[in-house]
Image (cartoon, rainbow, N blue to C red; front, side, top):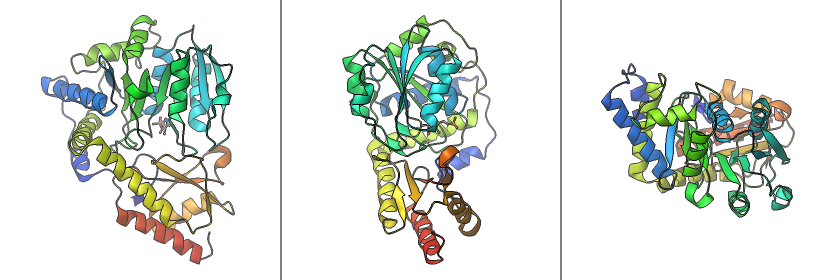
Length: 354
Ligand SMILES: *Cc1c(COP(=O)(O)O)cnc(C)c1O
């Protein structure tokens, strides 16, 4: 099956080779060295300021979102949650569950956030945003959000789970306190690990806040990471695969990887320009193209591609389930793979299925 979903995605042969081996024992100097390298490579790729730290949690991306809400935020914060889709909603749900004092800024699905929507929220202390709202494919105007946070001394916490490597992301430039990502998106290894990068302001928050959880405690994770370890048994194989990917990206250059993904997105968008789809977001991320078929029937398109052409694309959930489907551009995808998909879509048009 060709996989154009937004995760888990296809992995390169070197990563797959690692997955075929048994996991090694991990309380060893060798594994510690690898983890310390993972931390350093992540911090460099994110352009994190001096004294930043990065930890690897064995949990899906949502675990990293929850760890930020539990460990970096506290009872006294007044939190802004940008909510433009299912991942924004998840931050709102997490804030409610953990009794954070929060204000939602609702964004119409696929529409860009405007500065006016943040008016009167200057007195808040923290802002949670999914840099790329993966459900609609929208890439938020991070420059505007970053400026707003800087001007008002607001702690900026960024879910870049699907944006890391696909879109430009620079912690120092954004002035972000924390950025998270996950193993199964553009890192393109198996699912199971999420990554939390903390600038000094967030490290300080974690040190000062009371610990309210054990498994997702960033304080414990930070303490153990000083010696390249984790508090509990991690997804060892996934971490080895992350090391392989980070090393390879570091060697080729972050720019090369971002350009590769941007080029795949561009090629796909060009080759479907004549098909009866409306692009969903105002400003798309390079990671995903979210499409709205003129006549609806998104679910059926996803099914036919799977059953008749051997291609996975990503369905949407909730109220958009039959209106929108998404095509991912992350993972081990080639131009030939894209041609397979666009040929299939053109064939469906010929058959009167679009
Ligand atoms: C994939 C994703 C997540 C995490 O989802 P999990 O299923 O928990 O890994 C969170 N935020 C965004 C923006 C995502 O794309």
